[in-house]
Length: 222
Image (cartoon, rainbow, N blue to C red; front, side):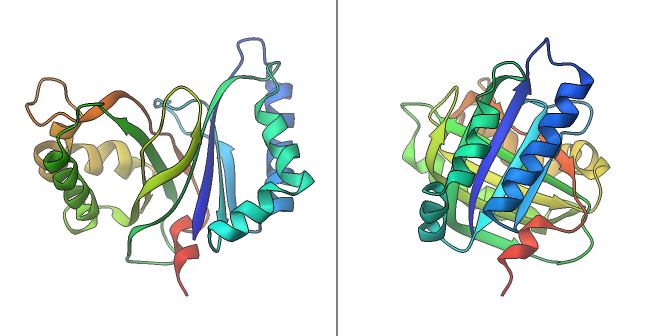
């Protein structure tokens, strides 16, 4: 599956009714584009990446390109460009990558991390980071499914390079078991921390998480 992700930060002047209308309009527009979609306000506490999340799933990049040519895509994109409600948004599209799918019906929390690399990132460290990210489900309690892929198209505050998306058993696992497991601390954080000599990831990153009814990544299953 090929994914397109929007992450929006609400404008300071947007009131509750404007946000509710935005949520309804995004869900309607996303549904007009593809039946594989997930759109909702992010959970508390807010993480870097804004207040609202929308992900669209397509069979492949060709289907994504076809969808972008339709009026319904423009309708959705225009909602995120409405400065009366949205102060700014990040966009990323990505497809082929490594998928680990452990379950297809239970997980109640979805999270997407997008990030870029330092201009002088060591290629050996990049390869090491890729390998460690792909092995997360083997070591992190509560992390059921994940996909790690290179971003092929993006917009926003950075030239986004990678996407790492996850299905967790419950929302508390992201900020709890996931963040505190030794594997995350010893094998993942070092690529994101300027104090470490293996630092290769730009400190500007986005990582919202939200509730879901069924695992979004299960849509990759045959």
